[in-house]
Structure formats: structure tokens, C-alpha cells
Length: 329
Image 1: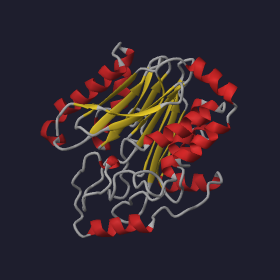
Image 2 (image 1 turned 90 degrees about the vertical axis):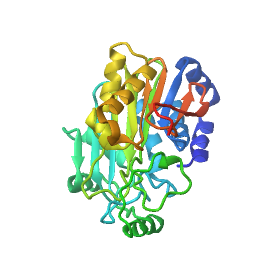
Image 3 (image 1 turned 30 degrees about the vertical axis):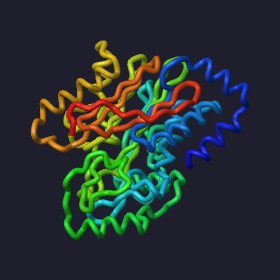
Image 4 (image 1 turned 60 degrees about the vertical axis):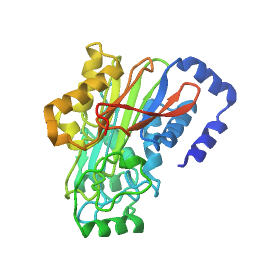
């Protein structure tokens, strides 16, 4: 759904009920998500919460917005394919009771985040991958739909001329893409909290554009693309997934929060750790983290300038912020 349609849902909610929820939610952020296009996802998530939905309902609704957007080539439908021309999706959803579901290398299904939730609710497992994930989606009634659009296919065929995997930082917020750029960190991560300080999150992506077939990044991996812990905090990541996975990045952020660091300090700590660990190997590479505390405290930090995130407060006001960075450019 678009931002306008999500706002329409919000407008349909009885005004008195909305005001009660806004007063109860308290200060701080209620919904956070990565990148500028997270504003529309936040609107859908906030609308779902305001209509009485659960935190899981909210983060799922938020993730579904970019998944269905044909103009967004980084998540879901119209995502850029792998090097063989197949669009494959990864997603995870998690709450602070330890409930978690994930899918990786899912094909022919628009809403990977919803399939991930169904894995959580309908199976004894936490992750399904590849053909098994796709078959599970069909068995659960998710319609089959080709994900490769003409625009995405053209970008892939143009890329085939060079087959250049050079990472390109902050592509999520670029109107035009450098021909042959790897588009290596295509993700939306979304975090939400309620008035009691309970937390949930989701992360969904079509993955690195033109990746090797079978590649899975950090996004669907618990403790990498997403981690949530009751009473402590929630974190999500964006950027080159391999670098996040090397350090179990979001688990590290939440562990730092458990040890007493603020969400901001925890995000800064893991980014500095990656830079120290990897040295010249991460030159020109973007990695960013976004964290949310149970009282609505926010943290965000990245390697390179350009990472943005959308924050929605308890009154439904959304502001897009620029995260601080370790390096200048």
C-alpha cells in the first residue's frame, strides 16, 4: 500500500480511540525503519497499531508496503534479480518473546515478510529456504506471482554487459543508479514498540542485486539483520550483508544495550568494531544499524554518510533523519 492509502486507514480509525492510544504510548519513537522509503512503511505500521493490531501485525504491515511497490527495486516485487535473472527474497520477523520466522531465497511470492510470519506461526522451525520456502508459501495460500518486472529485467541485462560487482553505497536513496553498480544493500528493517515497552521487528529484502544464485545476506538471519530482546531493545541493519553477518551485528547491538549502552552508543560500537576488524576490506562499503529501546530511545550509526531512517512518534508524526557516520566519504 502507498503512504496515502496507509494514511487512509489511519483516518478511518475512531478519533477518540486514536487519542487514547497516542496518550498511552508515551514519549520516544513508536516505529522506526531504514531509509527514506521507510516513511510509508511507518505510516502503515502506525495505522495498524492505531487500529488495535499487535506489534507483529504492525511490522508485517510496514514491510508489505515496499514489498508491493513496483518502483522500489530493493524489496519484493520488482526487486533486482540474481546474476541468473531470478528474483529471490529474504525476510525475518521477530518479537521480544523469542517468536521468530524467516525465509530465504523465496521465489514467485510478493510478501516474504508474511510468509516468514507464517513459518513462525505454522511450523516448528524458524527458517525455510529455497524451493521449500516457495512450496510452503503455495501450501499456505500465498498466490504465485512473477517478480521480475520489465524495468528490473532491463537493469539486469544492462548489468550483464560488465558483470561488475563493485559495491555502491546508499543506493536505496538514489534516483539514478550507476550502470554496473552492485546495489549491494537493498533492505528495509522496521522496529516497533507499544506503550508497555514491548518490541517487535521485521526485515525484508530482495538482496544484493545480481548476486550469485543462492546467496543469502544478513537480512533473514536472526542476530544479523534483526534482533529483539524483551526489556532491552531491538536492532536492525542495512548495508553490505556479509559485513553484518561476520560480526552478528544486531545481536551485538542488543548485547551492548543489555550491558548498559544507549541505543546510539551500541550502534556506534558495532560500526567501530567492523571498521577495526576489517580495515581496508570495507573501504567504500556502507553498513548501518538502527536500534530502538523499550522507552522509545533511538540509535543510528553507519560507516559512510548517507544512511537515513524514518522515525514515527506516539502522535503519528514521522521525520526522516540522517544517521551519523564513522567516515566522511
